[in-house]
Length: 88
Image 1 (cartoon, rainbow, N blue to C red):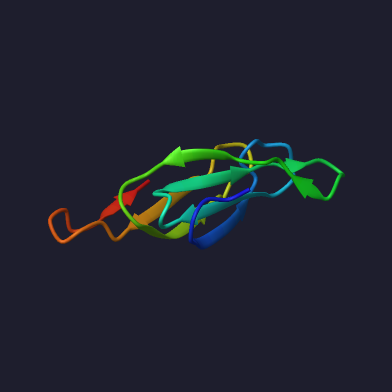
Image 2: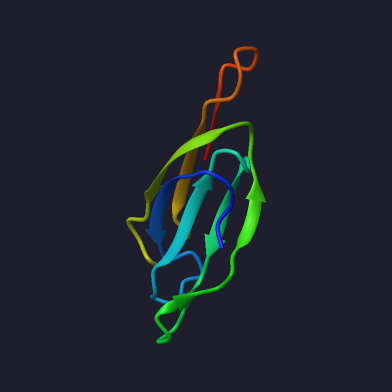
């Protein structure tokens, strides 16, 4: 499952098994959920949560070569004091 107030989603092969997995950015949970594709079952794992800064809003993925790990960038709005964040 995903976290609270899911804002953005990206499909990318995280575990390098040739099946697309899902990354879901959760604004109120301040995290990203990683849902791995269950090969040939048409479903995903329940998800692992990775903590982020305050109020993440967007995600971008760049994966030009399947032989290396993808580059994932997540933007967080943050607060007035910290002026937001970008995680790569």
